[in-house]
Length: 261
Image (cartoon, rainbow, N blue to C red; front, side, top):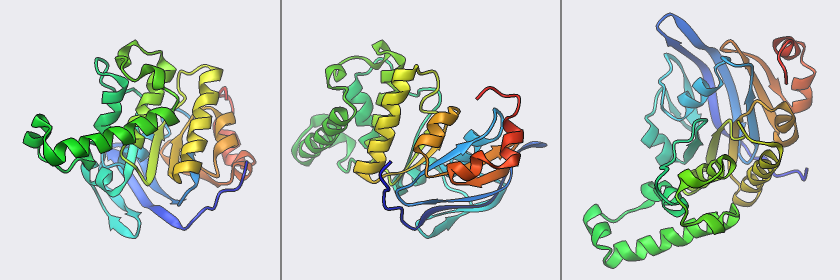
């Protein structure tokens, strides 16, 4: 894989602990993410991976620790703040509008960027109309990039699962994120769909320069496309480093023994 220029730390997660009642979901987790890298978070089921993403994108507020994004430190943020700052997220369970077309679903990712008020938008006059034309042009570029031109007008609910996942990625890209959080983007896919998704993730990273944080169960995929990997087990960090370092880490090997990966 061609070496991309990895930059300085863009996202720094420090000493995050998260509890639900008496249950510890995350205990004192620290790691950082560098600009332009693909950073994977792996671990067995129940390791706390999705909880970690939920802390980063403001869905959960951790009891301890802080998150620094581009030099600004927060003990907690809400999801809208996170999105406005440039962090977008895809979800394990597709949160798409099934009755709406591919184009309209991806357009919803532009909402944060729309400046004109709802009244002008509804009438589609003056600046609102110009703005909509610009946003549509941007969305059309994403549709071309993801090779889903043939489905632009198709209701998302009628598409096969792999293509729905691509639309979900498109909607996140429509926000023009600096950091993209992908929660199991390849879950439930066949081999061909996984290969396509890998290619799109690498292209997003390469062509848009987007930093990617990725949760994925397919170890082959993780080892192929990640620059660095952090490993969680029962809410604790047990490994952190290059794919090679993580693959040879005895704690990681132990955590995965007896699980089919």
